[in-house]
Every structure is written in C-alpha cells, then in structure tokens.
Length: 512
Image (cartoon, rainbow, N blue to C red; front, side, top):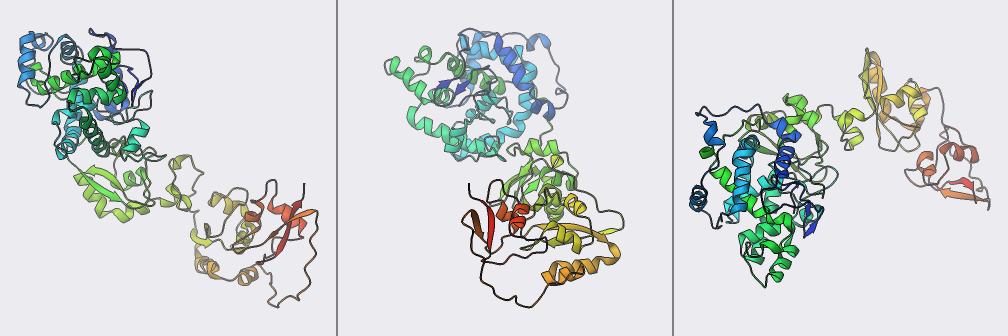
C-alpha cells in the first residue's frame, strides 16, 4: 500500500501487493532528496489551508540544542524507554531519519504535530478496538504526512494510502462521488483490519509494516531468499530498496513524536477542531447548501469531510456521515429542514445529483411582478402546448427550466412564471384534463367517439411502431437513430394537437 510519497519515502511509488512504480530508491545512507520530498508533501494545499502561521509555545527556544545531533547513547536509551511491543532498534539508518525529523525538517514536523491532535484519536480508537500497538498510528506520518487527500502517482489515496482494489477489498466505498480512502475514520478501520491480517501471517510487527508498504509478495520473496529468516533486519537487503527505508522511517517518526518537546518541537496551530460530532445525512445534500445556512466556509466542510469528491453527499439510497464541530452540529440539527430546502432546485435539478451547479445552466430569479406555479408533464404534452396554456413564450418556458430542443418527459416538473394577480387561475391548469386545457387556448377537442375505420394497411417499405402507455412523439423518436419527432409527425400526418392512443401504429422511417 504505498504512500504518496511517504513523508520520508519520496517518490517511492510502491504499489500495493508488491509492485513498484519507479526505479528511484532509497539508499542505505541518508538520502538527500528525502528533504525535498518532505517539503513537497507537507506543503500540499491541504496543510496550507489547515494551518495558521506557526506560533510556538511560550517556552524558551534554544536554537543550538534544537539543531544539534545528540549522542547515540541518548537515542538508544530513549527508544528503549518507549513502552511498546515493538523492539525499536537503533542503527545508522534509524539515526539518519531521526535527524531528518528533528533537525533538518523541523517546520514540517511541527505542522504534523498540530494536525495529529485531530487525527491521532481516530487512529488510536481503531487500533485499541483490535488491541493492536498504538504506535502504529505513526504509519500515516510516513504514508501521507496526515494529508487525507494525498494521492500517489501509483493511485494510492488517503491518510493510509490505500490502492483502489485494496480499499474495495476492505470495505471502502469508492465511486464518482465518494472515496472513503480519504475518510479518516473509515480508512483507519480498514487499515487496522489490513494490519491485523498481515500480523496473522508474519507475527512480527516490523515485517507487517514492511508488507504494508511493498506488499506481502515482496516480503515473502525476501524471506525465501534469506533462507527463511523472519526478522526485518535479517531480510533487509532482500527487500526492495525503497522498502528498506520504511521501517527505519517509522521508528524515527515514533521517536520524533514521542520526544518532540525534548527537541523543542511544538505543534503548529491547526484550524482543525479537536472535538467533532457526526450527523447522518439521509438525502442528497451539497456543501453549498450547508454553507449557505450555517454561514460556514465550504473549505471548512471539505477539510472535515474529505471523502466527498464533488462537494456532494450522495445520500440517495443510504445515509452518509457529515462531520461538523459540536456547535455547528447543533445548529444543523436545529435547521435541518431549511438546509435541505436551501436552493434545492439549483443543486438537485429534477431530483438529480449535481456536483458543480455553478456550471449548470442559469436558474433565473422570479421576474418582478410574477409568481411561480408548477406544471407536471403528462403523456402527450409538448412544450409548445404547455406554453400556450400558460400564455407564455415557448422560448421563455425552455429557458426557465433548462429545456433543450423541446425535450420534456412525463413526470417532469416545470416552473412557470405568471402574473401574481392570476396565480390562482394558472395554478389550476396542472389538474385540468387535456380537453379543458385546450379550451383555454380557444381550441376544442371532440368528445364524440370517432367512427371506427379499418386501419390503414402497413406499407412493407416502412418501419412501424405500436404506441404504448406513457409514449409521446419524442420518446418514440428517441428509440430510432436519425429519426425526429417532426419526421414521425410528417409521415403520419400529425400536428401539434394530435393525441396518440395506445395501440396506434405509427410509421417511423423507410426500411434500409
């Protein structure tokens, strides 16, 4: 499961299940380009947006101590003092990463310390539920620098850098609207399940961590090549070069976060709240609707809910979580109906999900002196007929409802703007019969049953269609390539007022 570029594993490009994307590898000594990687990842837009200008705690800051390497004996003793089932080994490789975190890239570590106040409780809860070492919470430091929108060139995504198929295998929902690999809570549960499965294979946490990075296939291969050894340091040189640095980086991250204050590393203030609440959303909702009513910024909603790819919570068939601060969650509960109703026709036109409503056609304001009434399209209706009944121009009716090429469908709800003093008159039209509506335009519809005549014999040179319930000329024409409703009207000598009947045979086009 590779990291985007792990905080310390630049461009390692390891794809889950043991594949590697690039030949760039981490040398056994201190890799100079790791510093560039750390800059690149931590300075992603997410961190820039999430963190304020750094304000250190009011503690005396001794620059000479902060940037000075310590004796090896100090590192060895401190690692030994960490209470963990993992044996935190110290060697030259671990030391190189410790100095990277505590000396060379202090600002980035302080940024991650600030973000950890928000993310670590979620990681710890998931790990504790499975009675797994809480130190595993430092893996996302290596994988994503605590950036839930981190995305690798290999396709890994999220805090824990799940590949697509691995995420799906562990129950994460990934589609056009949602990517639960970015969901801090859901992805943490999945990552813990994955780590648990790996531990059941290797019974050694460092082998588990290595397999998490390069896949079990590569670890198994290294074990075979080493003669069956099941110790990370004994199979070290049989692992892919990029994975060799992964465990030392993990040990160093654990050290840096555990002994941050000893190195004068202090959390950079983050805008992410420490305490949040979750509300289950039961119908489609756009972030702009929430922002408009609660008076919050959309970017704030994106940071707390990074799993929603298009600012839409697609709660059509099931409920989805929305994470907010406690105060905003209470405000949401008090204003829930208003939030769902806010500009709903703009964001979910005709009940459909709209991810970028600002790019849809213009939704006009109600003209001055006008009121809005609605008409539900019935079988046999046409845009011209409806405009005639409401005494409006066809072009206006199309514009008001984003109708293209006169295409409407049965059940579609059309907004019509009519004079305020005639609202009651026009509001009744929706419930009138076809004959009553035609009489509004001065046209009559015969109520006498037409004389039954023998049906016109079918022409063998033409394709025919039998009218079914719910059909209209447009839906019929759509069934045939190169045929328009005008073509059908011409061939069958129909006009705009002609009404189709079930069982009626219509000439469609010439046979090829």
